[in-house]
Length: 509
Image (cartoon, rainbow, N blue to C red; front, side, top):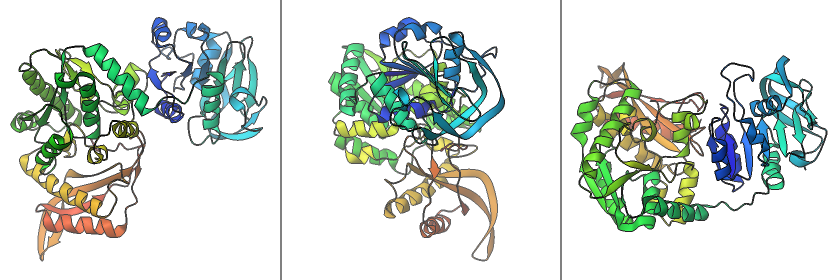
Protein backbone atom coordinates (compact mmCIF):
# COMPACT_ATOMS: atom_id res chain seq x y z
CA UNK A 1 0.00 0.00 0.00
CA UNK A 2 0.92 3.65 -0.43
CA UNK A 3 0.40 6.28 2.27
CA UNK A 4 -0.66 9.75 1.05
CA UNK A 5 -0.11 12.58 3.53
CA UNK A 6 -2.70 15.34 3.15
CA UNK A 7 -1.09 18.78 3.18
CA UNK A 8 -4.31 20.38 1.94
CA UNK A 9 -4.12 19.86 -1.81
CA UNK A 10 -7.30 20.07 -3.87
CA UNK A 11 -5.78 17.21 -5.90
CA UNK A 12 -5.47 14.66 -3.05
CA UNK A 13 -8.24 12.50 -4.43
CA UNK A 14 -6.57 12.56 -7.85
CA UNK A 15 -3.36 11.23 -6.37
CA UNK A 16 -5.37 8.43 -4.75
CA UNK A 17 -7.15 7.72 -8.04
CA UNK A 18 -3.88 7.44 -9.96
CA UNK A 19 -2.45 5.02 -7.40
CA UNK A 20 -5.63 2.91 -7.40
CA UNK A 21 -5.62 2.82 -11.22
CA UNK A 22 -2.32 0.96 -10.92
CA UNK A 23 -4.10 -1.63 -8.75
CA UNK A 24 -2.19 -0.50 -5.67
CA UNK A 25 -4.05 0.29 -2.45
CA UNK A 26 -3.56 3.69 -0.83
CA UNK A 27 -5.07 5.79 1.92
CA UNK A 28 -4.94 9.48 2.83
CA UNK A 29 -3.95 10.54 6.34
CA UNK A 30 -3.46 13.98 7.99
CA UNK A 31 0.03 15.39 8.62
CA UNK A 32 -0.25 14.88 12.39
CA UNK A 33 -0.13 11.12 11.82
CA UNK A 34 2.01 9.30 14.40
CA UNK A 35 5.29 7.75 13.27
CA UNK A 36 4.47 4.47 15.06
CA UNK A 37 1.15 4.34 13.19
CA UNK A 38 3.05 4.72 9.91
CA UNK A 39 5.37 1.88 10.92
CA UNK A 40 2.34 -0.32 11.66
CA UNK A 41 0.83 0.52 8.27
CA UNK A 42 4.14 -0.58 6.74
CA UNK A 43 3.61 1.22 3.41
CA UNK A 44 5.79 0.48 0.39
CA UNK A 45 5.95 4.21 -0.27
CA UNK A 46 4.79 7.61 0.99
CA UNK A 47 3.50 10.54 -1.05
CA UNK A 48 3.49 14.03 0.49
CA UNK A 49 0.75 16.01 -1.25
CA UNK A 50 0.71 19.62 -2.35
CA UNK A 51 -1.10 22.32 -0.41
CA UNK A 52 -2.06 26.01 -0.47
CA UNK A 53 0.17 27.11 2.44
CA UNK A 54 3.66 28.56 2.33
CA UNK A 55 6.29 26.55 4.20
CA UNK A 56 7.15 29.49 6.50
CA UNK A 57 3.56 30.39 7.38
CA UNK A 58 2.76 30.10 11.08
CA UNK A 59 0.08 27.42 10.74
CA UNK A 60 1.42 25.65 7.67
CA UNK A 61 0.91 21.86 7.88
CA UNK A 62 3.93 19.82 8.89
CA UNK A 63 4.64 16.16 9.52
CA UNK A 64 7.27 14.64 11.81
CA UNK A 65 10.53 14.88 9.77
CA UNK A 66 11.42 11.40 11.05
CA UNK A 67 9.19 10.14 8.23
CA UNK A 68 12.13 10.90 5.91
CA UNK A 69 14.41 8.53 7.83
CA UNK A 70 12.23 5.42 7.90
CA UNK A 71 13.92 3.91 4.84
CA UNK A 72 10.61 4.10 2.97
CA UNK A 73 10.65 5.82 -0.46
CA UNK A 74 9.05 9.28 -0.25
CA UNK A 75 7.69 11.40 -3.10
CA UNK A 76 7.02 15.06 -2.31
CA UNK A 77 4.67 16.92 -4.68
CA UNK A 78 4.70 20.75 -4.78
CA UNK A 79 4.33 21.79 -1.10
CA UNK A 80 5.29 18.22 -0.17
CA UNK A 81 8.61 18.68 -1.96
CA UNK A 82 9.15 22.05 -0.29
CA UNK A 83 8.48 20.54 3.13
CA UNK A 84 10.99 17.78 2.46
CA UNK A 85 13.66 20.22 1.30
CA UNK A 86 13.08 22.60 4.22
CA UNK A 87 13.07 19.79 6.82
CA UNK A 88 16.43 18.50 5.56
CA UNK A 89 18.19 21.87 5.57
CA UNK A 90 17.45 23.25 2.11
CA UNK A 91 16.02 26.69 1.35
CA UNK A 92 12.63 27.76 0.04
CA UNK A 93 11.82 31.36 -0.93
CA UNK A 94 8.99 33.41 -2.39
CA UNK A 95 9.36 33.09 -6.16
CA UNK A 96 10.18 36.23 -8.11
CA UNK A 97 7.67 35.03 -10.66
CA UNK A 98 4.84 32.75 -9.57
CA UNK A 99 4.16 29.79 -11.83
CA UNK A 100 0.60 28.62 -12.52
CA UNK A 101 -0.58 26.50 -15.42
CA UNK A 102 1.36 24.78 -18.19
CA UNK A 103 5.16 24.78 -18.23
CA UNK A 104 7.74 23.01 -20.38
CA UNK A 105 9.68 20.57 -18.23
CA UNK A 106 13.29 20.00 -19.30
CA UNK A 107 14.56 16.71 -17.91
CA UNK A 108 18.23 16.43 -17.03
CA UNK A 109 18.30 12.87 -15.72
CA UNK A 110 16.13 10.36 -17.58
CA UNK A 111 16.06 7.77 -14.83
CA UNK A 112 13.97 6.91 -11.77
CA UNK A 113 10.70 8.89 -12.05
CA UNK A 114 11.58 10.14 -15.54
CA UNK A 115 12.38 6.75 -17.07
CA UNK A 116 10.76 6.64 -20.50
CA UNK A 117 9.47 10.22 -20.30
CA UNK A 118 11.87 11.84 -22.79
CA UNK A 119 13.97 14.99 -22.59
CA UNK A 120 11.02 17.43 -22.57
CA UNK A 121 7.35 17.23 -21.57
CA UNK A 122 4.50 19.48 -20.47
CA UNK A 123 3.69 19.76 -16.79
CA UNK A 124 1.17 21.60 -14.63
CA UNK A 125 2.57 24.09 -12.12
CA UNK A 126 0.76 25.74 -9.21
CA UNK A 127 3.14 27.42 -6.78
CA UNK A 128 4.18 30.83 -5.45
CA UNK A 129 7.27 29.63 -3.55
CA UNK A 130 10.35 28.03 -5.09
CA UNK A 131 13.27 25.95 -3.87
CA UNK A 132 16.51 27.92 -4.19
CA UNK A 133 18.89 25.54 -2.41
CA UNK A 134 18.76 21.76 -2.12
CA UNK A 135 19.88 19.85 1.00
CA UNK A 136 23.08 17.85 0.93
CA UNK A 137 22.83 14.70 -1.19
CA UNK A 138 20.07 15.97 -3.51
CA UNK A 139 20.45 16.50 -7.25
CA UNK A 140 18.29 18.55 -9.60
CA UNK A 141 16.69 16.28 -12.20
CA UNK A 142 14.42 18.70 -14.10
CA UNK A 143 13.79 22.43 -14.58
CA UNK A 144 11.45 24.88 -16.31
CA UNK A 145 12.18 28.39 -17.58
CA UNK A 146 10.87 29.89 -14.33
CA UNK A 147 11.81 27.15 -11.87
CA UNK A 148 15.43 26.03 -11.77
CA UNK A 149 14.68 23.17 -9.36
CA UNK A 150 11.47 21.61 -10.73
CA UNK A 151 12.43 18.07 -9.67
CA UNK A 152 15.11 16.57 -7.43
CA UNK A 153 16.26 13.26 -6.01
CA UNK A 154 18.32 11.89 -3.14
CA UNK A 155 19.16 8.48 -4.60
CA UNK A 156 20.69 6.96 -1.46
CA UNK A 157 17.66 7.82 0.73
CA UNK A 158 15.05 7.20 -1.99
CA UNK A 159 13.63 10.72 -1.60
CA UNK A 160 12.02 12.32 -4.64
CA UNK A 161 10.53 15.74 -5.21
CA UNK A 162 8.37 17.21 -7.99
CA UNK A 163 7.49 20.90 -7.91
CA UNK A 164 4.70 20.28 -10.44
CA UNK A 165 1.57 18.08 -10.23
CA UNK A 166 1.97 14.68 -11.95
CA UNK A 167 -1.50 13.56 -10.84
CA UNK A 168 -3.49 15.97 -13.06
CA UNK A 169 -4.26 15.19 -16.70
CA UNK A 170 -2.55 18.49 -17.68
CA UNK A 171 0.74 16.67 -17.03
CA UNK A 172 0.48 14.12 -19.88
CA UNK A 173 3.39 11.95 -18.70
CA UNK A 174 2.42 12.29 -15.04
CA UNK A 175 0.82 8.86 -14.88
CA UNK A 176 4.06 7.32 -16.18
CA UNK A 177 6.07 9.23 -13.56
CA UNK A 178 3.81 8.03 -10.74
CA UNK A 179 3.97 4.49 -12.16
CA UNK A 180 7.78 4.66 -12.08
CA UNK A 181 7.58 5.66 -8.41
CA UNK A 182 5.09 2.91 -7.54
CA UNK A 183 6.63 0.00 -9.41
CA UNK A 184 10.33 0.79 -10.00
CA UNK A 185 11.11 2.69 -6.80
CA UNK A 186 8.62 1.25 -4.28
CA UNK A 187 8.49 -2.21 -5.90
CA UNK A 188 4.69 -2.36 -5.61
CA UNK A 189 2.78 -5.06 -7.46
CA UNK A 190 -0.45 -4.77 -9.47
CA UNK A 191 -2.14 -6.97 -6.89
CA UNK A 192 -4.93 -4.92 -5.33
CA UNK A 193 -8.20 -6.19 -6.81
CA UNK A 194 -11.79 -6.19 -5.60
CA UNK A 195 -11.54 -9.94 -4.94
CA UNK A 196 -8.53 -9.40 -2.70
CA UNK A 197 -10.26 -6.42 -1.04
CA UNK A 198 -13.36 -8.52 -0.38
CA UNK A 199 -11.30 -11.32 1.17
CA UNK A 200 -9.38 -8.92 3.42
CA UNK A 201 -12.53 -6.99 4.41
CA UNK A 202 -14.44 -10.12 5.37
CA UNK A 203 -11.51 -11.30 7.50
CA UNK A 204 -11.21 -7.86 9.15
CA UNK A 205 -14.96 -7.69 9.91
CA UNK A 206 -14.79 -11.17 11.49
CA UNK A 207 -11.83 -10.13 13.64
CA UNK A 208 -13.47 -6.86 14.72
CA UNK A 209 -17.07 -7.92 15.33
CA UNK A 210 -16.46 -11.51 16.50
CA UNK A 211 -19.74 -12.91 17.91
CA UNK A 212 -21.44 -9.53 18.40
CA UNK A 213 -24.38 -8.32 16.34
CA UNK A 214 -24.36 -5.61 13.68
CA UNK A 215 -27.15 -3.32 12.50
CA UNK A 216 -26.99 -1.86 9.01
CA UNK A 217 -29.07 0.90 7.49
CA UNK A 218 -30.04 -0.59 4.14
CA UNK A 219 -31.22 1.90 1.52
CA UNK A 220 -31.17 -0.35 -1.53
CA UNK A 221 -28.35 1.62 -3.10
CA UNK A 222 -25.17 -0.06 -4.23
CA UNK A 223 -23.15 1.20 -1.23
CA UNK A 224 -25.39 -0.19 1.49
CA UNK A 225 -26.17 -3.35 -0.52
CA UNK A 226 -22.48 -4.18 -0.99
CA UNK A 227 -21.84 -3.39 2.68
CA UNK A 228 -24.63 -5.78 3.63
CA UNK A 229 -23.22 -8.59 1.47
CA UNK A 230 -19.69 -8.16 2.85
CA UNK A 231 -20.83 -8.21 6.47
CA UNK A 232 -23.27 -11.08 5.87
CA UNK A 233 -20.43 -13.16 4.42
CA UNK A 234 -18.39 -12.36 7.53
CA UNK A 235 -20.91 -12.88 10.35
CA UNK A 236 -24.05 -14.39 8.75
CA UNK A 237 -27.20 -14.21 10.88
CA UNK A 238 -25.58 -11.77 13.34
CA UNK A 239 -26.30 -9.00 10.80
CA UNK A 240 -29.69 -7.29 10.93
CA UNK A 241 -30.48 -4.78 8.18
CA UNK A 242 -32.97 -1.99 8.79
CA UNK A 243 -34.69 -0.15 5.97
CA UNK A 244 -35.98 3.19 7.26
CA UNK A 245 -38.71 4.94 5.31
CA UNK A 246 -37.91 8.55 6.21
CA UNK A 247 -40.67 10.06 4.10
CA UNK A 248 -38.06 11.57 1.80
CA UNK A 249 -37.91 8.75 -0.74
CA UNK A 250 -38.87 8.79 -4.40
CA UNK A 251 -42.30 7.80 -5.67
CA UNK A 252 -43.21 4.24 -4.56
CA UNK A 253 -39.51 3.66 -3.74
CA UNK A 254 -40.12 2.03 -0.36
CA UNK A 255 -42.43 -0.56 -1.89
CA UNK A 256 -40.15 -1.24 -4.88
CA UNK A 257 -37.05 -1.60 -2.72
CA UNK A 258 -38.82 -3.84 -0.24
CA UNK A 259 -39.59 -6.29 -3.05
CA UNK A 260 -36.11 -5.99 -4.62
CA UNK A 261 -34.17 -6.39 -1.38
CA UNK A 262 -36.16 -9.41 -0.25
CA UNK A 263 -35.76 -10.99 -3.68
CA UNK A 264 -32.01 -10.48 -4.13
CA UNK A 265 -30.53 -10.33 -0.61
CA UNK A 266 -31.12 -13.40 1.55
CA UNK A 267 -30.42 -11.37 4.66
CA UNK A 268 -32.47 -10.54 7.77
CA UNK A 269 -34.16 -7.19 6.95
CA UNK A 270 -36.54 -5.11 9.10
CA UNK A 271 -38.65 -2.34 7.57
CA UNK A 272 -39.40 0.72 9.72
CA UNK A 273 -41.90 3.48 8.89
CA UNK A 274 -40.53 6.68 10.42
CA UNK A 275 -42.01 9.24 7.98
CA UNK A 276 -43.82 11.34 10.56
CA UNK A 277 -40.82 11.54 12.89
CA UNK A 278 -38.53 12.86 10.14
CA UNK A 279 -41.00 15.31 8.63
CA UNK A 280 -41.99 16.72 12.02
CA UNK A 281 -38.32 17.32 12.92
CA UNK A 282 -37.70 19.03 9.56
CA UNK A 283 -40.75 21.31 9.75
CA UNK A 284 -39.77 24.92 9.04
CA UNK A 285 -36.06 24.10 8.53
CA UNK A 286 -34.47 25.79 5.49
CA UNK A 287 -30.69 25.68 6.04
CA UNK A 288 -29.20 22.67 4.17
CA UNK A 289 -26.60 21.83 6.81
CA UNK A 290 -29.30 21.83 9.51
CA UNK A 291 -31.40 19.51 7.34
CA UNK A 292 -28.50 17.07 7.05
CA UNK A 293 -27.76 17.17 10.78
CA UNK A 294 -31.43 16.67 11.70
CA UNK A 295 -31.84 13.78 9.27
CA UNK A 296 -28.67 12.16 10.65
CA UNK A 297 -29.84 12.58 14.25
CA UNK A 298 -33.35 11.25 13.66
CA UNK A 299 -31.85 8.38 11.69
CA UNK A 300 -29.70 7.47 14.68
CA UNK A 301 -32.63 7.83 17.10
CA UNK A 302 -34.57 5.31 15.03
CA UNK A 303 -31.57 3.00 14.89
CA UNK A 304 -30.87 3.12 18.60
CA UNK A 305 -34.54 2.38 19.29
CA UNK A 306 -34.31 -0.67 17.01
CA UNK A 307 -30.95 -1.66 18.51
CA UNK A 308 -32.57 -2.04 21.92
CA UNK A 309 -34.81 -4.71 20.42
CA UNK A 310 -31.81 -6.71 19.19
CA UNK A 311 -29.94 -8.39 22.02
CA UNK A 312 -26.17 -8.08 21.65
CA UNK A 313 -26.22 -5.35 18.98
CA UNK A 314 -23.00 -3.38 19.44
CA UNK A 315 -22.14 -2.17 15.94
CA UNK A 316 -23.68 0.11 13.35
CA UNK A 317 -22.56 -0.54 9.78
CA UNK A 318 -22.61 2.19 7.12
CA UNK A 319 -21.84 2.34 3.41
CA UNK A 320 -19.66 5.42 3.80
CA UNK A 321 -17.38 6.02 0.80
CA UNK A 322 -14.06 7.82 0.45
CA UNK A 323 -15.51 10.94 -1.26
CA UNK A 324 -17.94 11.33 1.69
CA UNK A 325 -15.01 11.45 4.09
CA UNK A 326 -12.82 13.67 1.91
CA UNK A 327 -15.60 16.25 1.45
CA UNK A 328 -16.93 16.11 5.02
CA UNK A 329 -13.89 15.84 7.23
CA UNK A 330 -11.12 17.01 4.94
CA UNK A 331 -9.44 13.62 4.81
CA UNK A 332 -9.80 12.76 8.51
CA UNK A 333 -9.15 16.21 9.87
CA UNK A 334 -6.52 17.22 7.34
CA UNK A 335 -6.16 20.78 6.12
CA UNK A 336 -8.22 20.41 2.95
CA UNK A 337 -11.25 22.74 2.86
CA UNK A 338 -14.55 21.27 4.07
CA UNK A 339 -17.17 21.33 1.30
CA UNK A 340 -20.25 19.92 3.01
CA UNK A 341 -21.04 17.32 5.64
CA UNK A 342 -22.47 13.98 4.56
CA UNK A 343 -25.12 12.41 6.77
CA UNK A 344 -22.96 9.31 7.32
CA UNK A 345 -20.05 11.43 8.51
CA UNK A 346 -21.30 14.72 9.91
CA UNK A 347 -24.77 13.79 11.18
CA UNK A 348 -23.95 11.15 13.79
CA UNK A 349 -24.39 12.06 17.48
CA UNK A 350 -21.24 12.24 19.60
CA UNK A 351 -22.83 10.11 22.34
CA UNK A 352 -23.78 7.31 19.96
CA UNK A 353 -23.74 3.99 21.83
CA UNK A 354 -23.11 1.83 18.75
CA UNK A 355 -19.60 1.35 17.37
CA UNK A 356 -19.10 1.97 13.65
CA UNK A 357 -18.20 -0.54 10.95
CA UNK A 358 -17.47 1.10 7.57
CA UNK A 359 -15.87 -1.47 5.24
CA UNK A 360 -16.12 0.76 2.14
CA UNK A 361 -14.72 3.96 3.60
CA UNK A 362 -11.55 3.84 1.47
CA UNK A 363 -13.35 3.07 -1.81
CA UNK A 364 -14.65 5.25 -4.63
CA UNK A 365 -18.07 4.54 -6.15
CA UNK A 366 -16.78 2.83 -9.29
CA UNK A 367 -14.68 0.55 -7.07
CA UNK A 368 -17.78 -0.32 -5.02
CA UNK A 369 -19.57 -1.36 -8.22
CA UNK A 370 -16.60 -3.58 -9.13
CA UNK A 371 -16.73 -5.03 -5.62
CA UNK A 372 -20.46 -5.69 -6.06
CA UNK A 373 -19.69 -7.62 -9.25
CA UNK A 374 -17.01 -9.62 -7.45
CA UNK A 375 -19.58 -10.48 -4.75
CA UNK A 376 -22.15 -11.38 -7.46
CA UNK A 377 -24.63 -8.72 -6.36
CA UNK A 378 -27.67 -8.33 -8.62
CA UNK A 379 -27.06 -6.01 -11.61
CA UNK A 380 -30.11 -3.87 -10.77
CA UNK A 381 -28.63 -2.97 -7.38
CA UNK A 382 -25.13 -2.47 -8.76
CA UNK A 383 -26.23 0.07 -11.36
CA UNK A 384 -28.73 2.10 -9.33
CA UNK A 385 -27.80 5.75 -9.61
CA UNK A 386 -26.60 7.30 -6.32
CA UNK A 387 -29.40 8.62 -4.11
CA UNK A 388 -28.38 10.73 -1.10
CA UNK A 389 -29.11 9.53 2.41
CA UNK A 390 -31.10 12.72 3.18
CA UNK A 391 -33.11 11.90 0.04
CA UNK A 392 -35.46 14.50 -1.40
CA UNK A 393 -34.85 16.57 1.73
CA UNK A 394 -31.81 18.13 0.06
CA UNK A 395 -33.45 18.33 -3.37
CA UNK A 396 -36.17 20.60 -2.06
CA UNK A 397 -34.54 23.99 -1.67
CA UNK A 398 -36.20 25.66 1.29
CA UNK A 399 -38.87 24.21 3.56
CA UNK A 400 -39.92 20.58 3.24
CA UNK A 401 -43.69 20.11 3.20
CA UNK A 402 -45.93 17.19 2.13
CA UNK A 403 -47.16 19.20 -0.86
CA UNK A 404 -43.65 20.08 -2.06
CA UNK A 405 -42.56 16.45 -1.59
CA UNK A 406 -45.51 15.29 -3.71
CA UNK A 407 -44.60 17.70 -6.53
CA UNK A 408 -40.94 16.68 -6.56
CA UNK A 409 -41.77 12.96 -6.49
CA UNK A 410 -44.00 13.30 -9.54
CA UNK A 411 -41.36 15.36 -11.39
CA UNK A 412 -38.58 12.95 -10.47
CA UNK A 413 -40.62 9.95 -11.58
CA UNK A 414 -41.18 11.44 -15.05
CA UNK A 415 -37.53 12.44 -15.38
CA UNK A 416 -36.17 8.97 -14.55
CA UNK A 417 -38.71 7.26 -16.79
CA UNK A 418 -37.62 9.34 -19.79
CA UNK A 419 -33.90 9.00 -18.95
CA UNK A 420 -34.32 5.20 -18.90
CA UNK A 421 -36.45 5.17 -22.06
CA UNK A 422 -33.78 7.26 -23.80
CA UNK A 423 -31.04 4.76 -22.89
CA UNK A 424 -29.12 7.20 -20.68
CA UNK A 425 -29.64 5.77 -17.18
CA UNK A 426 -26.44 3.68 -17.04
CA UNK A 427 -24.46 6.30 -18.98
CA UNK A 428 -25.09 8.99 -16.37
CA UNK A 429 -23.65 9.22 -12.88
CA UNK A 430 -26.84 10.85 -11.62
CA UNK A 431 -30.01 12.38 -13.01
CA UNK A 432 -32.52 14.06 -10.71
CA UNK A 433 -34.83 17.03 -10.20
CA UNK A 434 -34.58 19.90 -7.72
CA UNK A 435 -37.58 21.91 -6.53
CA UNK A 436 -36.65 25.58 -6.24
CA UNK A 437 -38.02 28.07 -3.68
CA UNK A 438 -39.12 30.28 -6.59
CA UNK A 439 -42.23 30.75 -8.66
CA UNK A 440 -42.62 32.21 -12.12
CA UNK A 441 -45.42 33.55 -14.31
CA UNK A 442 -46.72 31.25 -17.02
CA UNK A 443 -49.64 30.85 -19.40
CA UNK A 444 -51.67 27.63 -19.46
CA UNK A 445 -55.00 27.43 -21.30
CA UNK A 446 -55.00 31.18 -21.88
CA UNK A 447 -54.85 31.65 -18.12
CA UNK A 448 -52.08 33.31 -16.13
CA UNK A 449 -50.26 30.92 -13.78
CA UNK A 450 -47.81 31.60 -10.99
CA UNK A 451 -46.26 28.25 -10.19
CA UNK A 452 -43.09 26.40 -9.13
CA UNK A 453 -39.81 26.09 -11.03
CA UNK A 454 -37.94 22.77 -11.13
CA UNK A 455 -34.32 22.29 -12.17
CA UNK A 456 -33.09 19.15 -13.93
CA UNK A 457 -29.59 17.95 -13.05
CA UNK A 458 -27.80 15.25 -15.04
CA UNK A 459 -24.06 14.65 -14.74
CA UNK A 460 -21.36 12.29 -15.96
CA UNK A 461 -18.61 11.29 -13.54
CA UNK A 462 -16.37 8.44 -12.48
CA UNK A 463 -16.17 8.94 -8.72
CA UNK A 464 -18.25 12.06 -7.83
CA UNK A 465 -15.11 14.01 -6.93
CA UNK A 466 -15.39 15.80 -10.28
CA UNK A 467 -18.36 15.83 -12.67
CA UNK A 468 -19.48 17.40 -15.92
CA UNK A 469 -23.03 18.28 -16.89
CA UNK A 470 -24.50 15.82 -19.35
CA UNK A 471 -25.04 16.97 -22.93
CA UNK A 472 -28.45 15.34 -23.26
CA UNK A 473 -30.20 15.62 -26.65
CA UNK A 474 -32.47 18.65 -26.98
CA UNK A 475 -35.30 16.38 -28.08
CA UNK A 476 -35.05 14.36 -24.85
CA UNK A 477 -34.87 17.50 -22.70
CA UNK A 478 -37.87 18.89 -24.54
CA UNK A 479 -39.91 15.75 -23.90
CA UNK A 480 -38.97 15.76 -20.21
CA UNK A 481 -39.96 19.42 -19.85
CA UNK A 482 -43.20 18.98 -21.77
CA UNK A 483 -44.32 16.02 -19.68
CA UNK A 484 -43.45 17.65 -16.36
CA UNK A 485 -45.33 20.88 -17.11
CA UNK A 486 -48.36 19.05 -18.53
CA UNK A 487 -48.58 16.24 -15.99
CA UNK A 488 -47.47 17.79 -12.67
CA UNK A 489 -49.89 20.33 -11.21
CA UNK A 490 -48.00 23.23 -9.63
CA UNK A 491 -45.05 23.40 -12.08
CA UNK A 492 -44.91 25.79 -15.01
CA UNK A 493 -41.20 26.08 -15.74
CA UNK A 494 -38.31 23.61 -16.15
CA UNK A 495 -34.64 24.66 -16.28
CA UNK A 496 -31.51 22.59 -16.98
CA UNK A 497 -28.42 22.88 -14.77
CA UNK A 498 -25.29 23.23 -16.95
CA UNK A 499 -22.69 23.66 -14.19
CA UNK A 500 -19.81 21.25 -13.57
CA UNK A 501 -18.10 20.10 -10.37
CA UNK A 502 -16.06 22.07 -9.50
CA UNK A 503 -17.05 24.84 -9.04
CA UNK A 504 -20.55 23.51 -8.26
CA UNK A 505 -21.36 20.36 -6.31
CA UNK A 506 -23.52 17.60 -7.83
CA UNK A 507 -26.33 17.96 -5.31
CA UNK A 508 -27.65 21.48 -4.83
CA UNK A 509 -27.58 21.21 -1.02
